[in-house]
Image (cartoon, rainbow, N blue to C red; front, side):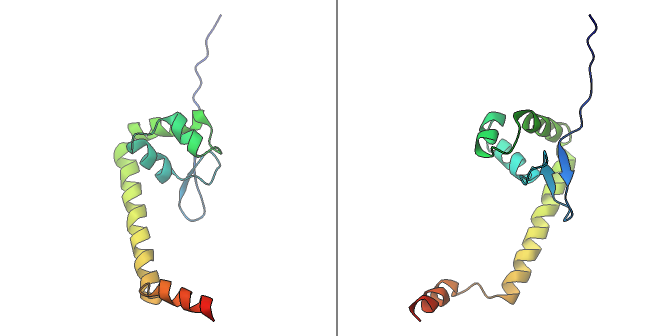
Length: 108
């Protein structure tokens, strides 16, 4: 009997916004890496995100471990983009006093 070893593609896709998502789901690479770095097992990650397949989570964790510098560079870039968007939003919409403004609307 012959045993065939086949390679399978890593279940990562880049969406139109440049965000890396896992296994055709809305779950991001950022989410998987953060959970794994916080000590979650692949099984716990799938339990928290049931749209994921266990094999996909293991493949993504393996990808991350093999290519940690590249993945961490991507994650830093995403954090920088998030900070820029947050700053832009805060400059356009002052976040101070939001709670009071919303409560004031409620009483009208």
